[in-house]
Image (tube, rainbow, N blue to C red; front, side, top):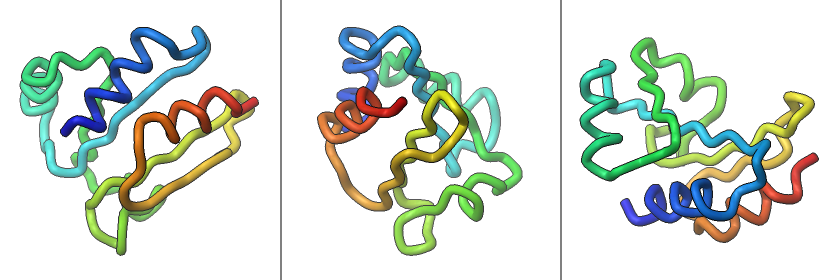
Length: 100
């Protein structure tokens, strides 16, 4: 869970103003669970629930499962970076900061 907190910390303290961070949870099935998750970890990023299971087939997941995957969409709507599996908040931040 520290990666989520690290990305959230970067978003709050260091991210460029035009960066938007969304977390999509495939295991949080309703808005109440999402709110509890955000509150439990003190998150500032927006967490979305993939209630209909539409996220995973489009954006992927590690090994075809619901494991973590990370996608950066640039200001033109183009996917500029995608990573399945483990990474670090620093790598995500560097990729986000270098996106157009």
